[in-house]
Length: 113
Image 1 (cartoon, rainbow, N blue to C red):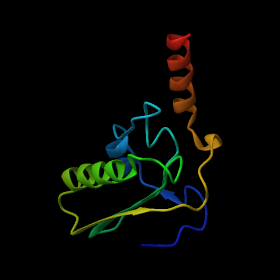
Image 2 (image 1 turned 45 degrees about the vertical axis):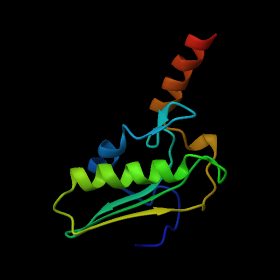
Image 3 (image 1 turned 180 degrees about the horizontal axis):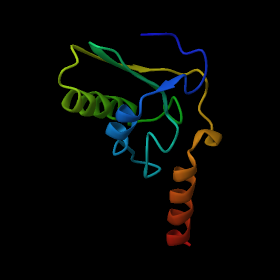
C-alpha cells in the first residue's frame, strides 16, 4: 500500500460509498463522516484503505476494521486483494469530521437536549 503523505491523499468515491454505513458505535456516525478514512484506492487488482480511529484506546477498533474488510470484500468481489490498514498519522481530530457529519452531530445533539 502507498504511504500516506497527508490526510485524504486519495479517496475513491465508490469505496467511500461502500463504507458509509460502517458506524463508530460510540459516536453514532460513519467512519466516512467522521473523517477516519485517510486513503481509499482502487487498482485493477486491489482495494486499499487506510483508516484511523478517534483514539488508540477505542475498544471496538478491531470490530470496525473487520467490518470495513467485510464490506469491501462483498462490494469489490473482483479485487484479488483487499488491504485495510489501521494508521495513527496524522492523529485524528474533530476538525476531520465532514460537513455532513457535523450536520448529523447537530441533529443528534438537538434530539438529546
